Length: 254
Image (cartoon, rainbow, N blue to C red; front, side):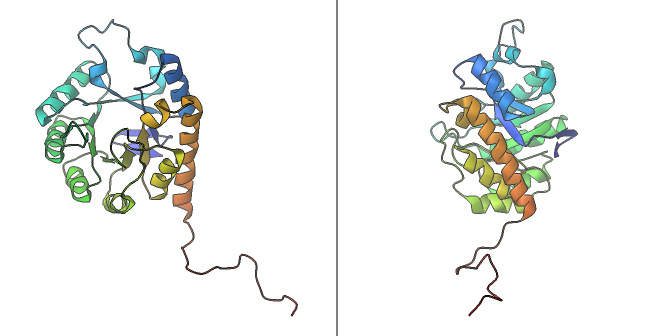
């Protein structure tokens, strides 16, 4: 069971809802993923005109917990303002804090992210900040009251997978809140590795939305997250330099 703040979830796969070629494929992929938490950029909705049709209308929102993000924010102040708009719209009290510090790399601004997290925690939000693979920042965010941390595996949308498993392991070992690996996942093997390292969950979007068959890829990601979690809980065998026979040698005729 994945616990974030006061909420509990069976699925450890979180799905982004952008970049799909059609709303029908989006809906089918989300269904196949088994995800219970859906994230999206609040700027994709016209909050000034709530009657305007939007992509969320194709989903049965009673089945999902919405996790709007502050994508587009370049300062802590902008992130806080976007989060307040999300709560005022009645969507959810959960928010993914995303403050981009560089428009080319799309890497998050660590200082602004920490500032926004502190402010939003004080205002009663369930806060999940997106960060780089920085163990010190992850700990500072936990101390600031974040309800989970979301370190990137590699740059957003790059599909490069986990570039620095060691630092992710540092974050996971030190954290007393959920660690959800976010950004850069390209294949089910990446998602499985994240879970094998001990992550509490995986958030992805491009790996499914840009796949040749998004619906079947969504199923693959769901199974990978489940398999990786089981592997972590079961405990893998240690690596050895030499071979070790799987069948006993004692008692063989000589």
